[in-house]
Length: 140
Image 1 (spheres, rainbow, N blue to C red):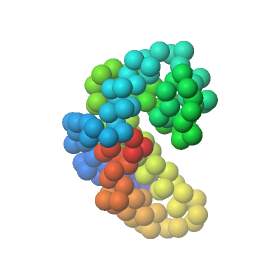
Image 2 (cartoon, rainbow, N blue to C red):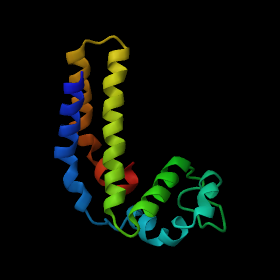
Image 3 (cartoon, rainbow, N blue to C red):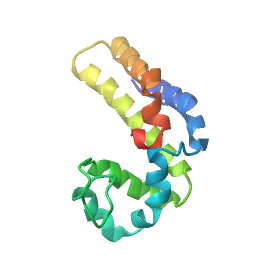
């Protein structure tokens, strides 16, 4: 099984590592990285992730798109990487990699054979339908 893990990690890195140099698309990612940067840097705002939507003005709390874990990962990225987009993209790759390994474990737990579990996880790792979730910052 450790060899399977290494192959899956290598596959994800080979495919998605180039995304760390991607720039903003000027859609939602610009809002989360540029417009909200000052607000994300203030640690006192962490609790607000649980009381507001992701697009709301911090003062109004009027947005109903409630995603506290998404906001918390953006806080983490802003603290670690500052104005660098690399931290945001690396976090997306790490989240995808963890999900790939969880798919492998899920199939093993469901009593699928080791090769079937591996290939299902590999399919999940490299399928183009998941590309947006990894390469686009708000896709996580």
